[in-house]
Length: 220
Image 1 (tube, one colour):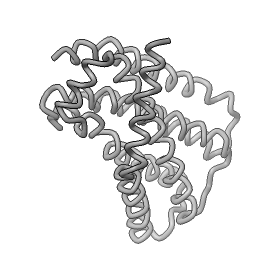
Image 2 (tube, helix red, strand yellow):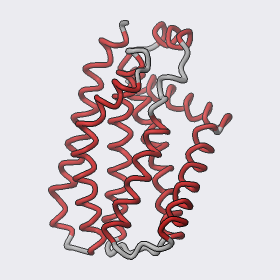
Image 3 (tube, helix red, strand yellow):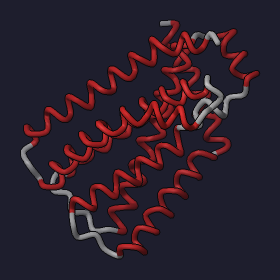
């Protein structure tokens, strides 16, 4: 119960700070709108459903990198020292994962609505595609939060972050694209159970690794 209370307090703190500054929300909104507009100027129309899907996930991937990669960078050393004295590492990493998940879900909804308005929406199964976008948002949040936490303890080295994220993001994107393609074609939902199970497993494993690894990084 104490851990849950600490996580809740930290998440509310991040949400309140973001609501006051609106830095991440405004920058993400600008990034998504401008990226979709540039794609529209370049392609005018996207008739191929596979290309429509791939372009959407590329936009969402780079938007998530910009939104989450600085999760720990914005925390000063003095603030981290203060957190170290009042809470534990598990509460810190869990709160960051939850906050970034909320942020990514919000970003994904904006991206999908904007993308669907500018480009014709060819999705055959809207519910299944929404599930794919939701699972993708959660997956990006968990993976990049874990990688950002590790990178912050190595001098925020962007090379380390790229090396750590690459082997996880590639198979994640493959599964997400396959699941969303099933939704685009309106296939039977039973076919996609395997992909959904894989995405859930990736999220569980990532969160578990974060809880096991971050306390050792936190000591430094």
